[in-house]
Length: 260
Image 1 (tube, helix red, strand yellow):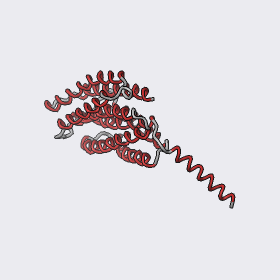
Image 2: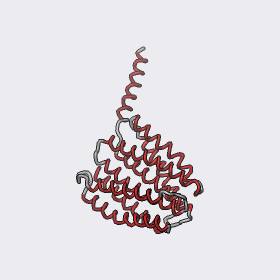
Image 3: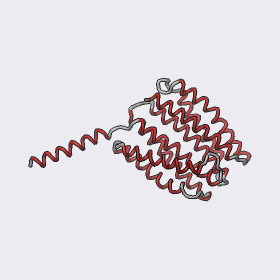
Image 4: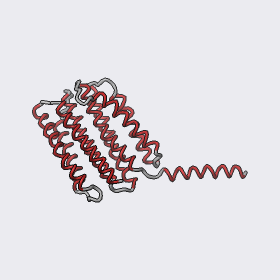
């Protein structure tokens, strides 16, 4: 009887230890989920580039590489044994991603591009919510701003994906309306960051955001002009999109360093 009690006590002890560890998210969880949001839109953009036989930046290679990154990040977050609610949300993102990944890694098909974009948009919206929940779970208010900066990257790639979709000849009657919506979302996020307390978003981060904005404006003009003229230049746009994306990643690293 005593051995049974002892065994039960040991089991309860390990359960208690697990529950203590499975409480809050860490900065790394926020980083990886925020990156997943960005990479999902970038992958969609690369899918269209491959479909158009655009070779600048080697989008075919990026598709494979970035899909692996998303898989690794999801595996990492799940291995951290977050609390039940967070873990459930992360697994839902993983479920959505698994279906999208299969389509992304197939030979690009223009006829399925709209449906694929629809699936990616659903996942990304949920991804943003999960990233915010992870940020809140850390107890560090500055993690919210990490998510916001990642959202700038996501919106820039979202604009890129929309542009490439239209350049590929995919019928989208709402192109100009959606371009305007993305630009507004980008500016709203940007303004929130620029108006944030400098204890959370440093002067240096704000300076870099303002510098990056000059390049995003170029993207905005190119996307809006193409919608009016019907003239698209995928390689030129990809060059500008990647420049903005890389700048935002540098800003993200600076903010993450400041947060830590």
